[in-house]
Image 1 (cartoon, rainbow, N blue to C red):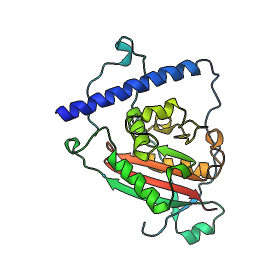
Image 2 (cartoon, helix red, strand yellow):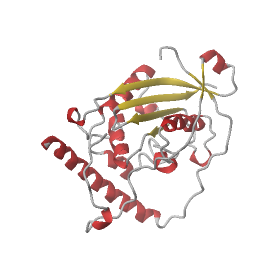
Image 3 (cartoon, helix red, strand yellow):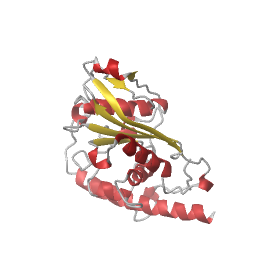
Length: 255
């Protein structure tokens, strides 16, 4: 139990730092007019070529931020589970080359972590880290090569841990990625230009597929107001449970 309590204390510190950042960002945003709605124009889905041959976080009751003196109020840090659907067309390379539009998997990796929290450090997404490392190794790419990343932000803290796991921040420093603007649309590595799960909800089975579809739209230059200019490579991380089942993909435009 001592180990779990220590991990929870670490998460509490990270959440406090994030609340400070949110308060600062809200202060800046209050003076800025809202932008256009990030709704891309509809377009035919590109074909996706699949190359051959292709490891529940613990929680403790916490009073609402507004009820804690000296702490800024925060929006819910958990995404909304809802109904939804998404689809991809998967084909072989030869068929994809015959299409007008096509996206190829440069990497598609999956890693399972232990389910029992007693066997894991809940402040470290090791399965996520391993999945990213495998994806970079199999593709011959690095984090610096990516134009954008769509990552599984099922909880605010999960996104920060994923920053650390993918190598974007040192351990315990995930919130600084936001504070320094690294993950902004015009930052060094735009994260979730789609708005992520916090924006569109989390229809479970459709979530991972939709992340691939949104990334494909970016690579095709068809993401509307969400578009990252000149996007050539998109990284995707999706997970099941508290980083128990971990999936990393890297997509590139073929045609």
